[in-house]
Length: 325
Image 1: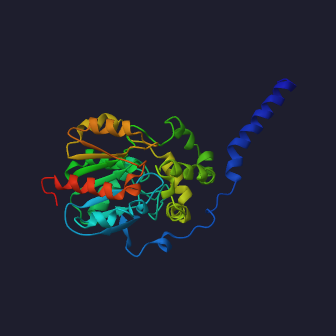
Image 2: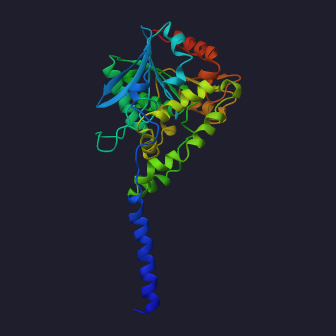
Image 3: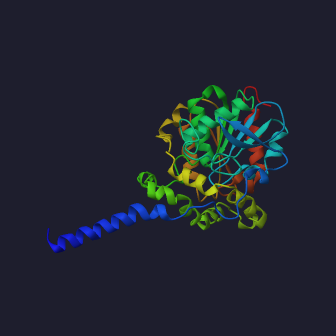
């Protein structure tokens, strides 16, 4: 072997060693300033064991139909704060933090069986298991954005458990996730090891998405910002968010919307810049018999910006169900 060839071989070997070994030498400790989830639980909240995962739940009211609320990406039960009590005047309302968000436990790989609880299909299975644990045979699923994806999957896979659907700004045609080709790269052990550090680096990007979600920025007060940031104070939030980015996405959900059989209401804000109103309308068009409603002066979070209009739409829809309140 020539001297030049040996030099090139040594250089390539050195680069490979750096790429393969050095990432594992970088320590990834707990995110600073975090504490156990139990320290942040509200007075009305409780933790429910669902297939070995501690799920944070808040509920109010009683009676049927039961409303099960599924929040969107980056949110938590906090997102429903304006509507839980009004909706509970006529129904039992149950809201929970989806895995990876809020106060629900963030298990690491090896601590769950079957589907990842961070993926949409795994969260659909967890939703049904939570219903079992909470004594809920059937429910109206109210899903916002990515939560609407989970709600639709439950309706498709377990139609006997779903009385009706309310899909709010459904992120079914407009996905907030990264491109599919990126996920195999995230699974590379070296990249996976650094995952929590990577997500800590783009927290500012998450806050910018929150800014874009509001039609009226004046409603995004400091208290609201702090409510959304609570999830970043819970132990393991960075690992949980990384697992969400790595989790598989549902296959051809948009193509299966025609299979949904239960009554469905699709709601969107007219000023939604995250999931365009046209996409929400297209989802309603694809679901047989679905109703479509838009709320003026609202963006991606109509249940927060215009809670009165939101509650009126939902209760009107429920009143038209065969066994409505």
